[in-house]
Every structure is written in structure tokens, then in C-alpha cells.
Length: 218
Image 1 (cartoon, rainbow, N blue to C red):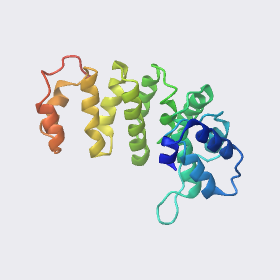
Image 2: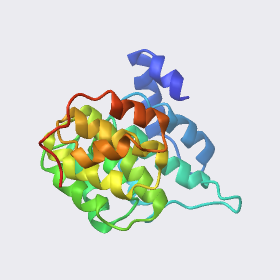
Image 3: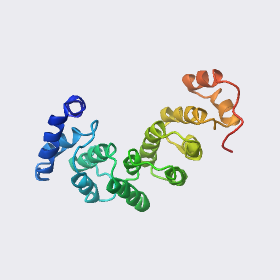
Image 4: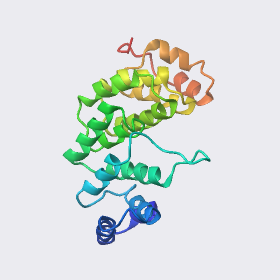
């Protein structure tokens, strides 16, 4: 469904969106398949139904006995992914409300991707200082990386620094020094630390950097 949505023409996407608006929650599998169409393609109609799915979803993901997401949670996660492409004041407000309540904190920031304001980096700095559940912190980090790639700015430095310091994922950890370097905020000590990291790729990257950057995060 995701790739069908990505490559379909506008008329087909419009029809799929209309079909989604007419669907009932009584058939969750069908609902999920339709929402996934918009994970890689902007939902072309009013986002109210997608927003409502998230508002009615409780405060965090739910799991089956085998530790997989329930179908209900899969629907909500897909709604987050769809709304990440939607620029709309109601989507931005939903993101801010969820973040304020610390609901769905591993996904909420994704709603700011298409609704970003420069001041939001201060909010990301605050969130990345908190002791969150490792799964939530990892999700937050992925959202921030996607946001940074679309909205790079020196104001992102402290949030990126926090992610390097506290992030639970060793693979994602390689992204933060590179992001800091791209905005000339890589601390000299971090550059040196990367030269001795357990990751060969990160060591090689640090060795190939130009001269250490003087403007850096303490």
C-alpha cells in the first residue's frame, strides 16, 4: 500500500482519500491498509479523521502477547506517518498537545516535520534532556533527525548534542556528530572521541574531517 501510494497519480490518491473518509473502524485491517497509502504520499483532503484517530488512541502504543503492536496501534502509527507529510495548523497543534502531555512521545515530534518553526528547536532540546523510555527516546531521535535534514539550523545543536550523549541506539549515534559538523557546531572533544569510537565508519569519518571546529557545544 505504501508504494502504491507513492507512485499513483493524483486522481487515484484523491479517490483513496475519499474512500478512507467513508470507512468504519469496524474493519480495522481494511482501515490500516488504506492509511498506509499515505505514509509516503501527502493526504490530499482535510486531516480531521487522521487527527481523530490519534486523539482517540490513548497515551502510548499497545502490544500483543508476542510484543508486536496491536492492530489499533498500527493504525495510529500509520496515521502519524501520514500526518507527517501534512502542513496544517491542526496537525501542529496536535503535536504540541501530545508533547505537552508526553503522550505518544516517540511519534509526536514527527507531526512537526511539515509544520516546523525555528523556535521548536528549544522544545526538542528540552525533550532530549528528559529520561524517557528507551523506545520513546529512540523514536524521538529518529523524528529529530528527519526534521533536521529538512530544517537544518544552528539552533538544533543542543538537541543533537543531547541525542549523542543519551541516545540508546549505537547506530543512530553516528548521525549526531555528522549533523553537528554540518552546522559547524561539532565540539573538538567529540571529534576526538569519534576518532576512537567502536564504529569503524565513525572513526573514518572523524579522521577525514577538516580542522576541528571552534564554535561548539560545551
